[in-house]
Length: 254
Image 1 (cartoon, rainbow, N blue to C red):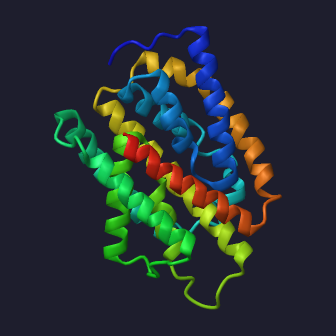
Image 2 (cartoon, rainbow, N blue to C red; image 1 turned 30 degrees about the vertical axis):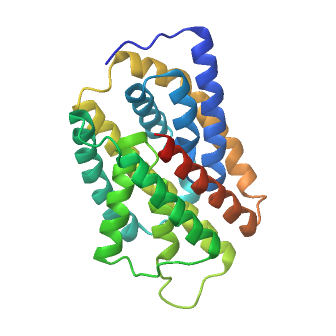
């Protein structure tokens, strides 16, 4: 991988983007990579940007774990993450071979369709069975390989998992969704970092840049976590819908 030029202006711009990305993740439980993808892409070649997105999110994935780790439904999170990681590994190899030139556009259309369903309140209600898990894991993994934004399919998947009994209060549903997303991305980004390292896409330059960006990202997450406590469930869902829409546009743009 080509050397990243660590100029002061580049570092400052990427730190500002990381701060905003951390704020987004702190509020919603996802979206950090979504904010980073277009902004990092303005300053860096796509492979370098994708590697940095994965590394920064991986380094900060355990932040605030005491508040969400017990609430996450791990029997749902882990199978989805395993499938997504397998598809991430396949996607990385296919992208390197140049055999996926237009897949990001198809994914972008699918993401916008999912956003429309989310806004309209239509959910694919399921019990975490084989078909929805395979479908969501495959899309999430491929999007992680393409541009590091694997959260769209995960949001729709976790929103559709049945509560298995008396319906949860809206506040509890929101907290459960956020906890599941944080747990999912903890596993996904750790695995994706290992895949990129194995593929030779992580070197000293990327690790040095990551060391600059992680404090800014973690600071944003810290502030976002406190803002989350002030949000109503309605505003939480509105922010999530907006992020899903932006993800579709990012994927379409490639």
